[in-house]
Length: 134
Ligand code: HEM
Image 1 (cartoon, protein in one colour):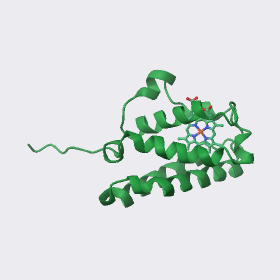
Image 2 (image 1 turned 180 degrees about the vertical axis):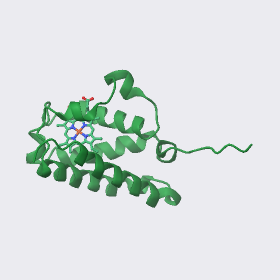
Image 3 (image 1 turned 90 degrees about the vertical axis):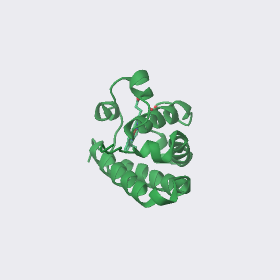
């Protein structure tokens, strides 16, 4: 066999990692007075947790449950109703950085640095991409 077999981040970290990451993230967001105002369902974050975890699982190579339930992600369009300026972007990233820090022990040690780096680059770039206000 000569073909190379690519492992996705999802293969490495497992499905439950995304639930742990998103739960840690929203535990922070729920106590953030700036961010929580943006969330249509307010401090009831059960649905928001589910949607973000499904999306991240799919993005990182796991099952396509997000697509089946919500359709094409079109994240910029889906964030258009919310003011995402530098302040909101940065606070979102603070909570995501803390969530990565809190859950990185769940990533197998041999891949931890590489996966954390990939996650960090992705969230920084995507949060800026979703910024829709100065
Ligand atoms: C890596 C960056 C981000 C990703 C991957 C992401 C992803 C998502 C996804 C998948 C949803 C659910 C969309 C749906 O199916 O309806 C969502 C909702 C939302 N996002 Fe983001 N987002 C990011 C950054 C941000 C930032 C910077 C903000 C601003 C503070 C933000 C605010 C929101 C709000 C208010 C919702 C609605 C919550 C809900 O689903 O009920 N997001 N985001």
